[in-house]
Length: 154
Image (tube, rainbow, N blue to C red; front, side, top):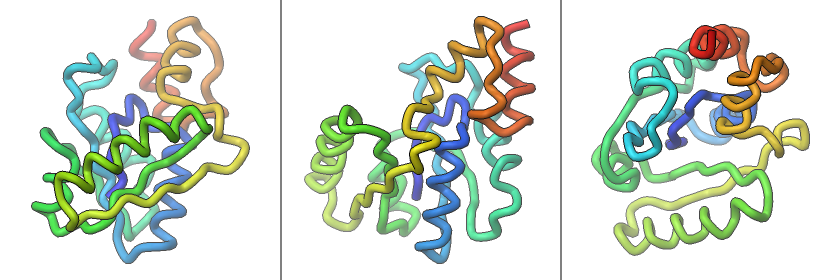
């Protein structure tokens, strides 16, 4: 599974999913409700956007979830959590998360993928901010996502 808030899904997320689909028979993109983060898009909107962006990848399914990521994985028979590492700054947080998940259950392993250099600087929060101030986000997100962002800030 590839979990995250995906608020919104970016080209970096998309690349990680596509690469994971080349490594595993199936990939579940699990979108966390994350109410504490006060997402711009509702859970249903984020799921719909991710489904649209990834519609051409047959090995991928997209679903929303609440609660602990590792519990969702365990309950759904998912044995691997895929996480993306953009920079060294991501490593400390991701390492802590992976270690905690391993303490919660030994049934789920975490693997890390790094994006290509084109996407190492792309984050959902930066994309939202650029869009909020009228900047062009088209290099960083799927056209459908760019249109939905524009609609949020008009």
